[in-house]
Length: 321
Image 1 (cartoon, rainbow, N blue to C red):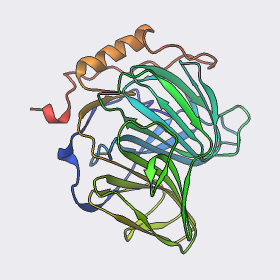
Image 2 (cartoon, helix red, strand yellow):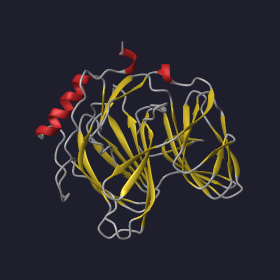
Image 3 (spheres, rainbow, N blue to C red):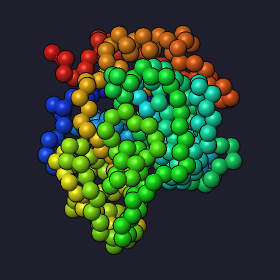
Image 4 (cartoon, one colour):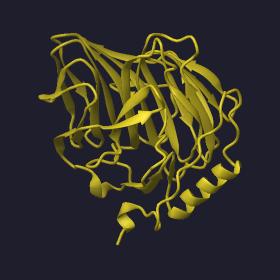
């Protein structure tokens, strides 16, 4: 799943000047975005008040949607550069195709990790014969300058490590948590974990005080550091924490996202992350001309056109005058 908004606006992000250096409790409300005919997503990042969490630069939560009589997810071929996409499901299946020739069906609690590097294109769709419910999250990780021109590739990991405590099971999606490390390739100090709590559970997760963190609620009702977080909302926690207290009022699922604050200043527009207006403009020209991003074979339909660039140059936030 990606940004299908043809009225896209640029987002400037990154840089330590916008990071909360101490623990905070900042509840973020989502922006609702229609994705095709039958899927609505709740966009948590980028948010009016918060652009990134570590290297996490984009977070969409969707479902649970009843798609028994619907086509479900239908995302035509579109381009990416300068980022990784993380596909994470609680219900349903997503068929991934990309311009490197990858073809994979991603199922619940499996990691679909696509590294765009310099350029890739892909499509995502619900299989024609699909489960009744579709529920998951799509996230992007910004690539640092040293790795953003790497060769594009796709990883599909069906067996991920877990951390357990009474009433809690944490699946490590990316990075490392409490000594358990994901097999997914990461390029910055980062963590992503899926937390499942049983009703009445009280637990405390170890955190890295140098990381900034946020928690996305997927389902149920849980209190994160004393704050109730309901499905489709996200609590930004800042830096400086060594533990994260959790309490479940019902069976609940959360996603823990964190990482070292991202030093570099970025420009994000549509499905691209770059460093300047010129990079974004060149990416748009290359996509519209059919070069550089390759071809997604097997998808039944045309690729997405890119939205028009806004008037005036796109600049990283730190360079705005």
